[in-house]
Image 1 (cartoon, rainbow, N blue to C red):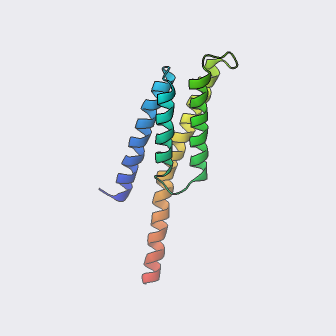
Image 2: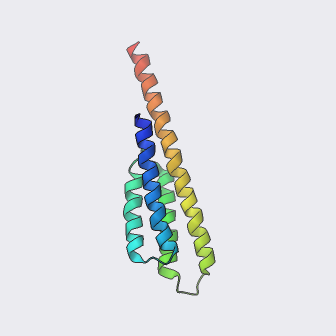
Length: 120
């Protein structure tokens, strides 16, 4: 098993776990789901190299989830809109995480090329 495969599997497992927590939130899960999501997002954003776009997507996802959990009973904004924003934030975060795998691989290949050129 290569490093790329292992890293990809770790990312996929994180995304699946986050997806399960998000499903719980969508089905009316409360503050416990929100706390778990926060912990998972912190862990997930620490897997790849520091990526401001990924961190921003994680922040957006948490904010959207928080709006669904905390404000679903208030009439300030229809729940349908909150759920749409929640799903869009999830899609952006998943896309950024998947992109992090590609970016990580490219950075490692670039480092290998540089090391090979220095050795030659």
